[in-house]
Length: 373
Image 1 (cartoon, rainbow, N blue to C red):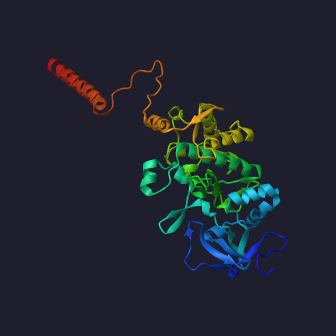
Image 2 (cartoon, rainbow, N blue to C red):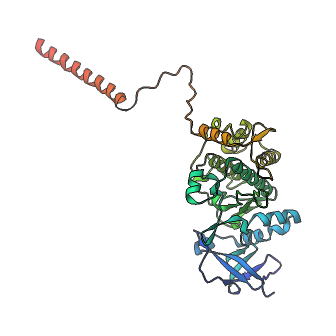
Image 3 (cartoon, helix red, strand yellow):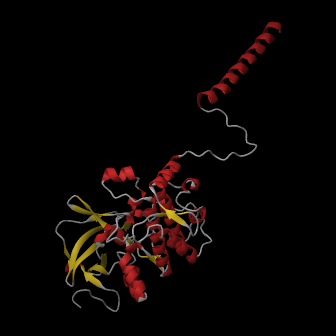
């Protein structure tokens, strides 16, 4: 074949057959450079060229299997996968060596206008407080919008796991989101996954497993990346979006009663703390649907009062929630515990005075012995 070539396997391109855009790379990270390009049979593609150190650890056979993975799925599942993921469509070779992959460009709905340019809209935007969003010129996602998008993300994870796919390095910079504004009077809540070449299929990845410290589970995990570690990172992302703080590790669930019933937080806590949470796919799908339901197709926003009831989200309700978030709750007293000792200079001064008094007493005793000896 002359373009996307194959030998009884996944598609591939020769490096020399790609025409890179002259404007330089779109971006670069520790493992790759990303370029817009065109191929002989396709006008617009993205070329992800691996750096030398990344190629040294690359499992080429596994990467080819990942490229071919969508063909193993049922047609409706394949369509959904390719609509939600920047899935590599071919490997790129230079001689006998794999040097990168090509993949589709992300759809326009995941970008926003920034002056004369268009920028990707990352999931990190869901953790930005309103004053910061306004100051930076970002769209702000109110709390029901955060929940609706988190619900969609949970549903996407369940779909991927059911099809033998684990993300592994799940973090908000690797996910794009749609706008918070209605599109044609319908609110769109979709996610688009990046860096899919590092995904695991049937438990194995073409790339080494990299796990940034801020997203590592607190429990011992000898199995590497699994569906459980994906769900831990989802739960951590959820509390970071709800608290509007990407550094948060825990939240006081009592402060979020304006948003969700406690049963939902019980589920999140199980995902955050247990290497074997007692939750089924049906449990997760039900939670995903419930969270997505708080933003209706006509743009109306709601909050969940229990597992089945909801009420319309109002400015007064939002104000009450923000007030509750900022309230310093008193710790629960433990019966029988003595009051805490004074801290600071007072706590240091008391032992010091006792030491001085004891030293003076010793001196007096010594002098008394000397005078009467």
